[in-house]
Image (cartoon, rainbow over all chains, first blue to last red; front, side, top):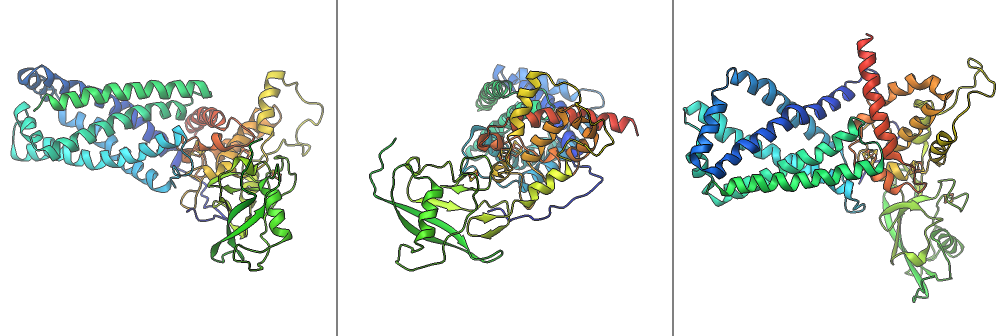
Length: 213
Length: 252
Ligand code: SF4
Ligand code: SF4
Ligand code: FES
């Protein structure tokens, strides 16, 4: 239940607008692009362990890899995640009274964000941080071993679907945030296209998971 | 007309004796008449304020004025959804009909809320055409008929509060002034004389209480009884806010 507000707080110099736009930008440019690359690279597992390991080795041989990872992935990801969590807590969700499509997609955007938050911490720890610390090589075998556990497998399915949804629905709302889709019809079509993308991306991700077991 | 079988209408009303007083539910039975709306049912309760237990109670109070969905005074949550009581025909409502005050605004008594914040927000966005003499007071520039048509939609806003009530991001945790003020910003910015205050309005739009708080849930446009294209106004404002923020940053 919402509490009534007589006088909303007001501040003159506001960084909120800047943060909100950076949040949207971070989600699309570095993170969205990285997700497209990540889903694609991992899908190489469908063509066998050798092809997959080749791709991983190729990426790992990139010069300035650590720098790229920090500047284009870690920093935007942390910012997007923390600001996004703040956003999800200041909304009063009311999908019980108002079951409109956009209100539901808005609600799922927050839910998926929270799922991804937990999932990414686990995922980055398992295949980037802990392996770097112990010097374990990341390859088809390691991932495959990991995914033998049905609970972890299910967690990955959830993480991948949530990520695909969050990116694709996020793209359709970013088009509004950046003032591109203005009218009702263009916004509706953008949402439909983004849902098709979501279906394709989820299918690719889940098929990739199955190719590891 | 849909025939209602029941001869009596059941109402469940969320009441509150005073500002800050705790709320409670009370039920009433109202004799059915054809073509009744929620207001005529409330008038019936006012005439004979006896609840389902047969107790004589304080009459239920609510706000109303025009009775034809143009003043915006009678907004309340009817069966969970915010709308105008005067245009809510009981034949089309599921029973028991629940009535609650809007929750985004301070509740003064029963179904009466204080919508003051929306008028304050209109002052913040300078929701007027300046005629203080610092601008030409003649007939002003012509406006094309397509622009007139577009502006007309926004001019029908009756400050009813439905959009603020349904917006997930207008609440006590967020400073957002909400979709009504955003729609009106677009409306006054598109008027050739109104546009003279555009920059001052854009400062509010990119401010703490501004458009950055919108999460594109688009409930506002769904519940607006005047069918104002609020989400189009929001997208347009997003576009001009981005431009405005960028150019004013480069001008620093
Ligand atoms: S689109 Fe924006 S203003 Fe409209 S209900 Fe959603 S969050 Fe509120
Ligand atoms: S924009 Fe629509 S819902 Fe919002 S206050 Fe105006 S008339 Fe009411
Ligand atoms: S009484 Fe004016 S809108 Fe209902």
